[in-house]
Image (cartoon, rainbow, N blue to C red; front, side, top):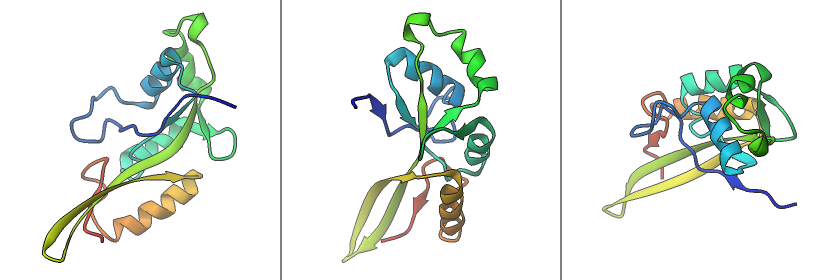
Length: 143
């Protein structure tokens, strides 16, 4: 099975990202661009995580769909010829910056979670390490 996916997205809670980067617009533009699976990005941010819990519902294993109440409005802006099923995959980019052997190291990791419970557990663990609420892309001092 072939499909188009975009697995590196940021929400409106990330620095230098449009305030219009919300689930409804991600859903709308995924349809217009022919994207079948799009990541949520930034699930570590507390307000974005709450929005994910409110607006998404489980679809297939590891994938979510936008609840009908939110999808209906977006669908009005999508031509019939572009309407398609869109699935969301939970993701976050975590930036780790640390010093090793007198050199600064920077690593960006893309983390995918199988469900909101797993994402919540990761959020709780990362909250003990650093500030996950200051930016959608948390920067942690981990090696």
